[in-house]
Image (tube, rainbow, N blue to C red; front, top):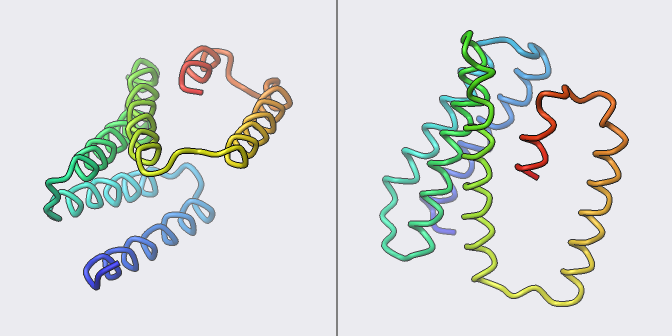
Length: 149
């Protein structure tokens, strides 16, 4: 990492810690959601200022853009009365962002046997956790969660 990247990393690490502290101290409060959205939006704007012409950087910028949209639909719009109608759009945006990120990291390295075993182990534990927590899920979110997963 160069000095600019290190400075940006430190600043956003600090902001992330603030988000975690605020979310713990004031769970579900509107100002925490607004602050989180502002941080994610500023991260996207900061990333676009860093000039990258490579395919990898363009895909990462697109992934950040879809992350901002997903946060807007799922976090920021929760403060409005039409939030319930926007959940599928938020999940779709996060799904696109994750697919873009996976494509970038998959291009960089091909998974071997060890990585595949770890993937299936983690996936198995997530499925186990999902079924254990299923009784606590809002049934209206079941289909969007399955699609997103």
